[in-house]
Length: 81
Image 1 (cartoon, one colour):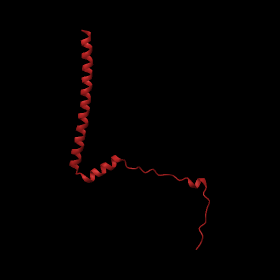
Image 2 (image 1 turned 135 degrees about the vertical axis):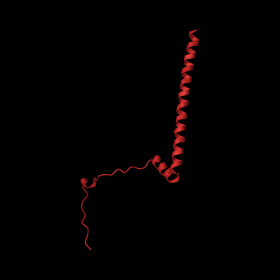
Image 3 (image 1 turned 45 degrees about the vertical axis):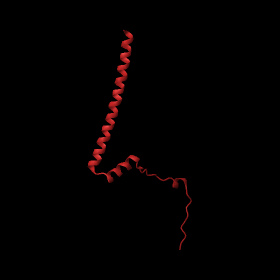
Image 4 (image 1 turned 90 degrees about the vertical axis):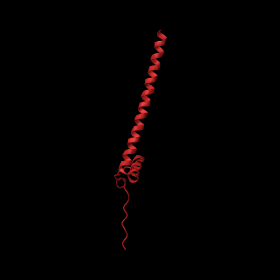
């Protein structure tokens, strides 16, 4: 049995390129679980439902903003008369 030659570690030898591997995000993990557990039709229905929820929230914000503007305008009109 021969001894393996030992070479001193030089600074240039210790620097190696690093490969960046993307770590899956929580969203990716949840979507993967969704693919496993739900059929295509169920996924579509869930996404459509969530889109409807987001749209309802947007409309509610718009309604509240419009109400605020109307109240501000009506307050100014009553002071002017």
